[in-house]
Image (cartoon, rainbow, N blue to C red; front, side):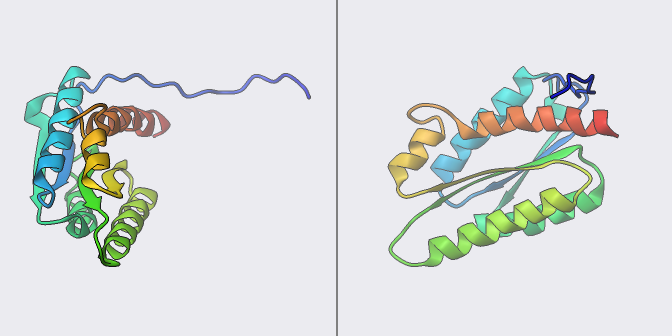
Length: 159
């Protein structure tokens, strides 16, 4: 194999001047508020001004993709972060909601000119959700917010 020079796109985690929308589900509110708090803390730590962050609350995770589509069409944001918690219950409703939300957000992410990141927890039980929302250990909201800033900078560099 020959050694060749290749272009590598590197980006920073500086969120200065980033305009961010966060779509957060009210359902399982204890969990989603913890995810939101983690995301906001991380965004601010990365230099995103609270003046350029818009939080949009929706009833449940199922409403996230449609709301994201509206936000994308507004052309006001550099990226959208989705936050929610879908916890398995006793009925197949979990599978329907998870599949709809995941495929909806994935489709928007693939077809949008801005990053749309998936920060919706899909867990078997409340304990797993608590573990992932910072109520016991790491916070997926914060982790997804960091990835959001990276993706904003990557998209800008590619353009």
